[in-house]
Length: 535
Image 1 (cartoon, helix red, strand yellow):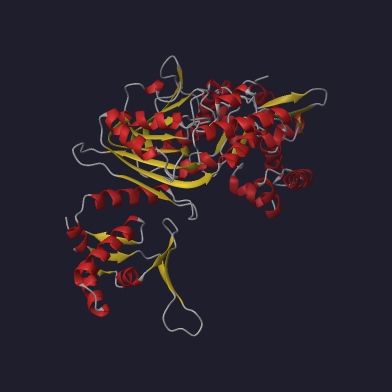
Image 2 (tube, rainbow, N blue to C red):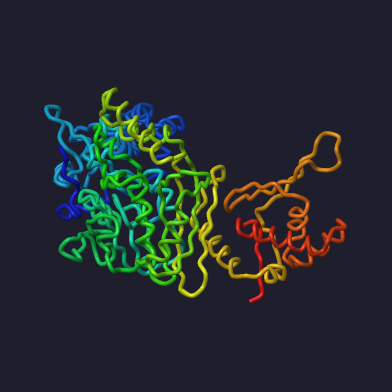
């Protein structure tokens, strides 16, 4: 049975609930739990945290109410009505029941959480998020209508958002509203879409809970406010003909073969588009259509999976993005950032285990075989995961830029870093070799150089450059590159350094100049140096 989600403003209780949750914060909760319990929670093991918080609650004292809130909403522990009245002294157990936050446990005089309501570590204006109960709490397979809370994918997308104020935003596939709420403090208007009516109900509740009370519906088919407008529909259908300054999306990108559904795998709304499209067609279709929904200068960031059928680690994405320009009649710059990849068997195993689907052994084997057969039939070598950054040019006449990189071993890059380097790459694509040669070059302050020597040798066996920030990359440097960056203090141009290196190493000046220009482009593209080109 599908329980009712919380209403956007249950009988005026939002303000009361905000007051009761004021101390229910990530930092307070982390201080309350031991490192062992926190680490266990990261592995979806509740027992250490349950034991520690129950001891705190039973001991009384200043942390009792926080412990009770966490036991109830984050760990799924039933409470007595008296304990619930302590945990939510303003709302009380009757208000919590009316708001669909708790349900009675029949015959026990206790209540249990009907939703996961957790503090979150997001921008200041987003303090708590409600969603359906985590599998680790209810111990059952997730139902098809399940609405996810904050997960790894949503946190990754939130970290990739560009900085600064923005006028009009589209959060495509909003779920419980993570991205829309993250952007609410710096956007004038947000349209958030989802195919799930239940997800939109949670997003409306979370909007009210974090931003202070009820809002008027903006259109008959939506809930929300003039600031966050929620619309139901698949992918870009609810925004036909509209354009946005920023589009963010964690779409239902899981690749599921039709035969897997036929073998009994349920369509999970939070991860499956439900279109029974072949392979990564949903992702490719979204990218193809997206350019027409961006304003000149507008940006988009999407995370997802794509199939790799040959030696190109970016699959058909670069060709799709080029097609998107022709399809939308726009000039699009794109950057595909590949973060991870799995072979077909790994991919099938991961999504078979996801959500604890209630499958018997034979059904599980049938679905597994369906995955492998589908991938083999289309020659899929691996499935990649990563980010796609797009910018629609404000100058449609200039050539577009399409670049792709793999950062599987580097730290997860943050949005400000990626968008800054995207701008650098666009600038470099418009600069001639003469421009780069005449640019002053300065190493970033967080870059260090290491020389690696064999015992007893005076010349280094290898030289490496490492970023302390940025993309967190380490690259091996040859003599020319090492010489270039060693002199990159901002006072000399690339050409001047190349001339000095050619004289020092007794090599051809033009060859050294060409090599240093290429090295400077690469170093600037990855954030190791800054090039100050003349205007």
